[in-house]
Length: 195
Image (cartoon, rainbow, N blue to C red; front, side, top):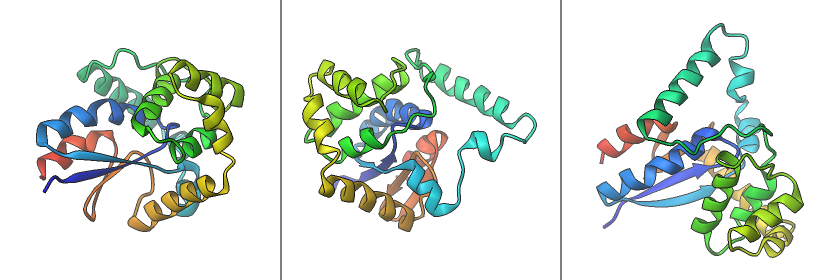
């Protein structure tokens, strides 16, 4: 039986982008499939009393500078030359995350959203920009935008987020194989070596 990794993600996390760019190839080498689970990072933070690193470590001398060094090392190691820090960061990803709970082709949607956020520097919290970006990616942006207001879609995102918190998630990216959890882009190799 093929093992599956549950990949808990939010488009607003640059580390989720970096994980999304590296995990599929490494998982394929192990014959592992990926189940992408959209969750709202803000909801996870609120439920777990967590904070974004810039707030949690903002007063810790050298911590954020070191985190940038580590991020750049990861980017260099994996050749992720298209990565650009989004100039609109932090971006409210509610539309993006609801859309992820509404679309049929989640793979194409994730590609469009991650590319817009972390390669093109697009402000995906703007509804018009959101719709035009999805249209440009070959998806029906207006239809997806309208679906973000559907009560069942809103409920699905809330359900995913609450379920992730119940499993122990406190931040993104997080992953599960069965009941075992890993956190962060730097844990991918360790996680796969455990298989």
